[in-house]
Length: 182
Image 1: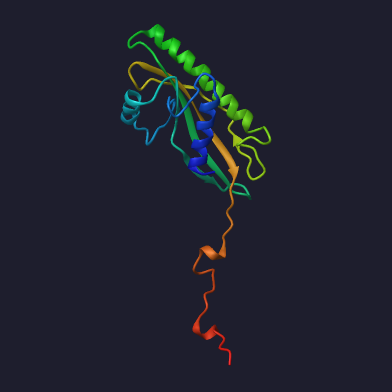
Image 2: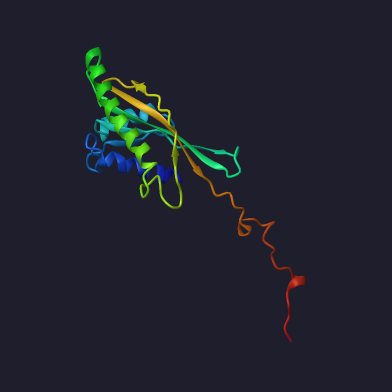
């Protein structure tokens, strides 16, 4: 699974979720790059609307502990909701709203991983989703509160070594092997 497929999956969920309803003209989906909160603050002041889904950057690893190596994708989603700065009760309200939406997204992801025909479960790949989701607050910005969940996807990886991709595995014709016809 590529980084773009990862982003596309979550963009689709943000579009279909009734609490978010992401649309290009009313942007409610944002991919966090290198955990840059300054960039996120700028996006909030210019184009990002709340409640919004914030997608953590795509990270991957290869698990070779089994005969068939697995690609392990680590990510996370956060939902951000506006609140009144310094108002603890309103911050709790915003966190509760964000937690509810984040759980909807996590539950849908988990369902998709077990439903044939869904983007995470099809004939070419089956994504196994971690079963442990530890929620955590997202309070890095003033006037906003949020809640997020990290997750891990595991899928079979094609590790075939294809001769045509390697100079030393693809015999190239030499002058000695050229046949000259009379």
